[in-house]
Image 1 (cartoon, rainbow, N blue to C red):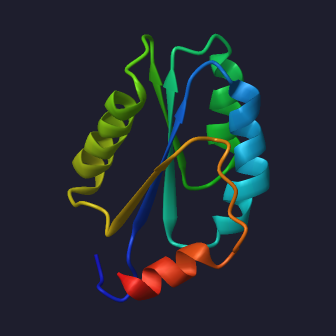
Image 2: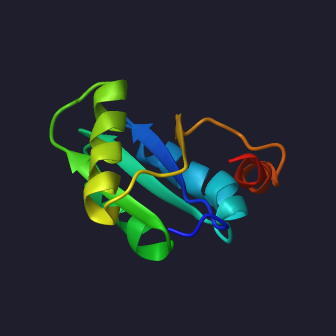
Length: 117
């Protein structure tokens, strides 16, 4: 990883709310999609996995991890971080763990974060 281009990992934990995930991706993640960020959505036992899989297919930079059981909030976040580390053989420069109800009022938030790290 080049020092000039920090990698930012955003982990979103979902529990039984596929509509909130879709809303988050459409309203918030789409603002950040051109920036150097990877989004991992961890699904904790939702019923409608097809809808979540469609989100993963239709948006670049999104990885969906599906758990058949509820891992809990931090268990799911830890699983996503372990996945990222195994696949990319490195840790991200910054990690944001959030719910789907987060709102990025400042669309330059991640650019500003990259300048700090």
